[in-house]
Length: 81
Image (cartoon, rainbow, N blue to C red):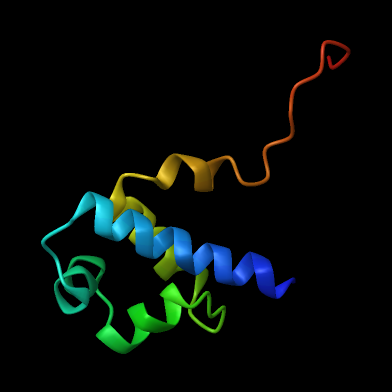
């Protein structure tokens, strides 16, 4: 997996956190997600040693879980049955 993707994943999480909860500091948002501050820091760096479930939980808290559900959804073609 490219380093760019991981960095972008973390950056998007950080931007979404700050936009959705502008008054939350890292510990407050980490509490919402149910992770430690250190884990949230790793997530915002795009660290994939953090479980996929924790990234999904952060997406739920941010109201962004729908894109996760579409992660492996193939586009529909006019030629598909």
